[in-house]
Every structure is written in structure tokens, then in C-alpha cells.
Amino acid sequence: MSTWGCPNDLDGICQLVRGAQCDPGMRGCVLHGKVQFASPAQNEPRKPFKAPPAPPVAARKKPNIN
Image 1 (cartoon, rainbow, N blue to C red):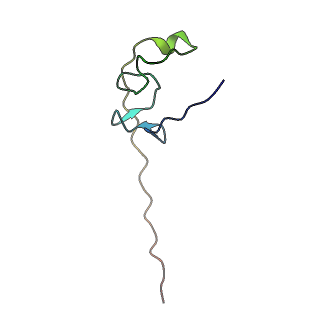
Image 2 (image 1 turned 180 degrees about the vertical axis):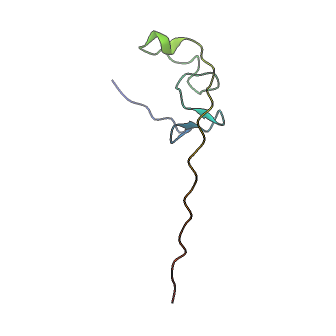
Image 3 (image 1 turned 90 degrees about the vertical axis):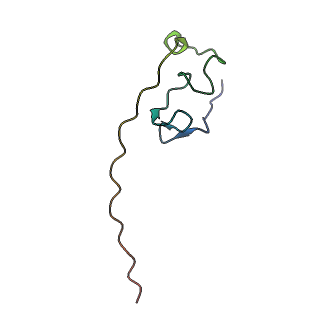
């Protein structure tokens, strides 16, 4: 058995299907229609789901250069 890491997955967000949660095999995914998953539910056609908004970026402290 082997594992695979998608190059379009960035912290669980699909970069190919903009703004969607990464769900291998969903419509628009590079795997869609090309592979057979072990789970029958994964083999059903699925629409992409919008990812939750990212948490706000904390204000960065400026370095004290003296």
C-alpha cells in the first residue's frame, strides 16, 4: 500500500478548485474519474465544499533595530 500527497493541497485547501476543502476525487480534482478508492462513498461523484475562512493573521511585531 502507498500514500499520495496532492501538490494542489495547501493546508487542507485545494488550490486547483479555488476555495474548496481538499477532498480527493471531488469534481475538479486531478483524481476525479481516474482512480478507484477503497471506500464506496469516495467513488460517488461529489461537489466541492467551500472551505471555512482562514483565521485572521496576528499583527506582526516590528523588530527593534538599534
